[in-house]
Image (cartoon, rainbow, N blue to C red):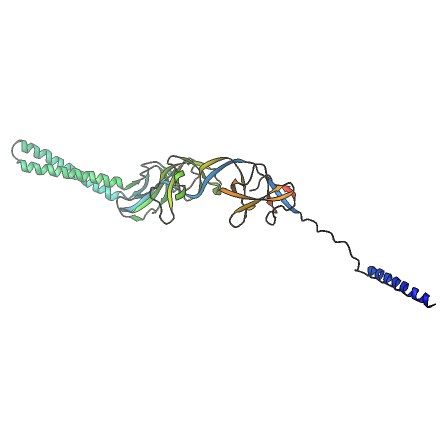
Length: 358
């Protein structure tokens, strides 16, 4: 009996241990699963194919429009204005009357000068006969000659003064402004009107010192009036200042632009585009695709389903794009979206292709 008990106890212990282990495995949350390695992250990206194209290195600068000629017309005699001819904004020819000053005073002076001249001429003729008869001395005759010359000068002056009472345009152009009204008094030297020539117009632009080697007199350039809803024009460089602005390191340039329709008006804003160089088969990328990496710049390209970081050398800027001098090849697929958080060699999924990114 004792022998049976000795054999039974170890069996009971084994059964108990087996039951205990089974119970532990059956408890909630006690199940152990075999650990699996985490799935590799896949980043969604958009790409664009790099297609080489011609690239223009362009100077693009703001400019302003001015009249080709602007002149203020002065009054050459004093008086009250009794007539104003063409309306402001009218196209006028050279010599056309603009303003007339009251002529009565100047007409009276002319009449007086003419009467003095007639008297002097009659006296001269009478004295000439007396001189020839020896009755009048040579000195007396010289006095009468001087009197005639003086009367001629007074008559000429009176004619000029009367003519100056009519203020005429010194050039052909547009009557931009009249500074006085009928009935107002003007003094000699007062500016009474402004005449401008706006066909052609002058476009003024300041060129940075570094770009001066690309500016040549008589060269044709593009002038853009997009902000004013006008078509772009071609102009000719007709002036380049030889002394620059020491503060801004710029040089003044004048461009002549034809304007037969008078659509381009003084004080309008324009942009001047000068082509510095033409680069064939250039590779350009959007600026936002370039990632600063401390002492170098990088981009990502798609290579067999993974992101590949490339160190690139940048060239000239062209709007929102930049030229790539080295680091990329034609027809590679540049990552343009989702690239900021990528790492070299990371697995990617292309979810879209951009044909052109501006």
